[in-house]
Image (cartoon, rainbow, N blue to C red; front, side, top):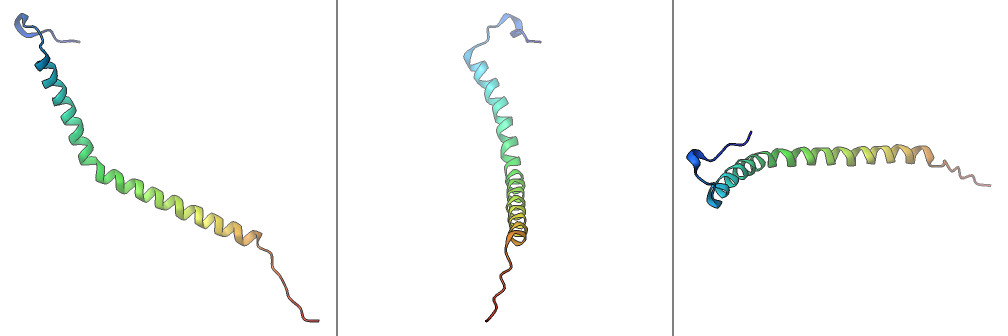
Length: 73
C-alpha cells in the first residue's frame, strides 16, 4: 500500500533519490558479500563438468578403439 507524503508535503526529487539510493545500496552490499562464494561455486561446477566430459570421452574412446594384431609371416 503506497504511503502518502507526511503532513501534506509534496514528494521531491531529492526524496526519491534518497529512497532509491538506500534501496540500491542495500542490494549492492548483498551482491558484494555473496560474490566470492558464488564464484567459488561456479568454478567448482565448471571443474566438475569438464572432468565428467573428460571421463565420458575417455571411456567412449576405449570402447570404440580397435585392437590391431600384427603378425609376422
